[in-house]
Every structure is written in structure tokens, then in C-alpha cells.
Image (cartoon, rainbow, N blue to C red; front, side, top):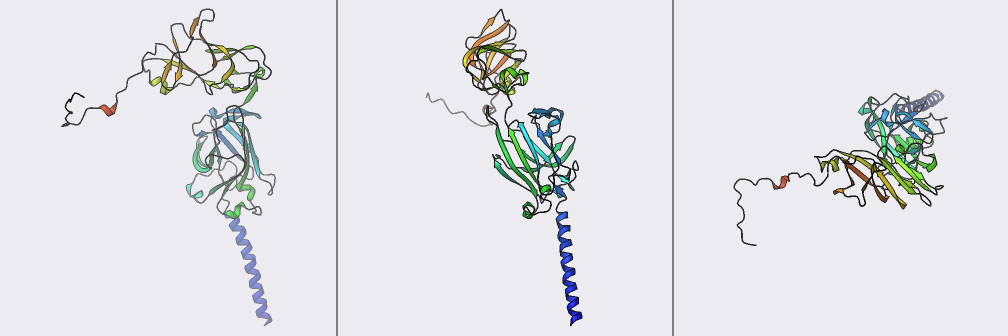
Length: 358
């Protein structure tokens, strides 16, 4: 009897030890793919919107300095009780973000096989703000490699105010991995924070008007001239002026240009069409024999009061709202005619209706 009892107890103890060992092994097996490595990870911002991460064109400046190739470090967790975190401040709204998945919790050891991610799910718990579309696991190009990453797009920001997004992002197979008592929770969940929007500068602190966004005119009380590139200046009284988004570019407007395929056209675009409190004088530095128009969805529009200024050697007009402008080498007097395919020749055998006089 004693011998039998001893054998039963030994079997129970052995089974218990086996169960613990199996549980630990299972726990480790579930972490072949992680969101954060034991030595951290890297988050990438697609700053030039080409869906290719970690390129020279993705470099941007924020409050903390320059982020080369759009790369922002995710530091390793301080311990197994604290989550790794990343803080973006300030990233432009509407930018796509990628966090590569890691093999065996090792930084820069990227996941490239579809079978490794087919059971993975992404969960977010936002405390501040929200996304228009939830994150997903996507096969993207980071640098010169295609890898699997968690991707999402920041919401579009307000015209002059920044917004916040803060919470947790998790990548998991089983819901048990999301619980606080899960041993390796710090490898599957990341604490994410971001302030997104346009950068803001005081008027006197603007060093580069080619890269200007939101300007604070709080201490301005006189007439000032702002120079945007080589071809545009605006002179206006800034006393009492509120903040404005003066972001601009010279991007080619393909849709507009297609309406006038006989012309060579350059563009000056104020993205947010800022309106000042007072009328000012705009100067567009084009040739006297060139033609200047306002760009609209319907085509070229004549600018009221546009005239040639011999002293400035520029086209000038009064306005309080800065819009998009076209500089053409020829007069845009008519839009390009395109053949309407719906009015093509009728099928053979069709007869026209007789003229009834109506």
C-alpha cells in the first residue's frame, strides 16, 4: 500500500513538473515574432508619402531635432514590468507609420515569411485620440528590404492646431498575451504617443520661409514683407493678425496643366489658402511677356487688379487671401479640347431619326 502511494505521488509530481516545463516552452514558442525586441526597435515615418520607408527623402525635423530617413528609435524596455515607449513630436498629420516585426525579439532581425504572421492580430487601446482606420500587418519596403510591419496612418491635422494620439499597440496570437501577468508582455505591447500637426514658429523666428508652416504673428504690429522662394512676395500690415498656416509649394498641377497642353506652366501654391485680416500686396516675379492666373478647379481665372509694376519688375495685385497661381508662357485663352468617346461613330446599320421639325 505504501509503495503504491509513493508511486502515485511520484507520478503526480512528475506530471506537475512536466506541465510547468511545457507551459514555459509554449510561452517561448509564441514569441517567435514580437513588436519590441529585448534591445528595442525602430519606428519609421513615410514623410514623402511614397509608401517606401527609411529613404533619404523621409528625413524630417521635429521638436527633438532631425530624424534621418524618418527613423525614430524605440528604446528597449527598462524591465519586464515596464513597456517600451515611443514619442513622436511633431509629425505631420496624414503620414503613414511602420513598426517592423522582429524575429526572436532581436532588433533589426526582420520578419519576411508570410507563415510567421498569418496567426498574428493587432490591437490598439487609445487613451487620447483615435485612428480613422485601425493598424494592420503589411508587407512593406523599409530601406532596401521588404518586411512585415505594423502600419497605420495618422489622422489629418487641423489647419493651425496640433492633435494628440496616445495609447498602446499590441501584436499577439492569444488574448492571454495581453494580460498584465503575461511574462513577456513588454515584447508584444508598445506604449505609443504622438503629437501630430504642422510645426509652429513665431514670425521673428522663421529662418526659412521655403519650409514655413504655421506662423504666430502675436508680437507683430507693422507692415512686413514675406518672401516665398524666388517668385513670390507678400507685403501686409500684421497688427492684430492671428496665427496662419502659410505652407506653400511649387508642385506641378497635372490636372490643371492638362487643360492647357499647349502651354508651359509653373505654379505657386498656398496649400491652406490663408486669409489675412488686412489686404496686402502680392508680387509675382515673372517676365512681363508671361501670363499670370489664379488656379481653380474649372481652370485659369483672371486675377482682379493684376498689373505690371515697372519698379518691382513683377506682376502685382491686392489681396488678403493667398491661393494657387499659374505662370504661363502663353495666354490661356481656351482649354484643350478632348474627344468625347461617348460621341464616337454609331454602329453600322443604325438609322438617324427623321427631322420632324421640332
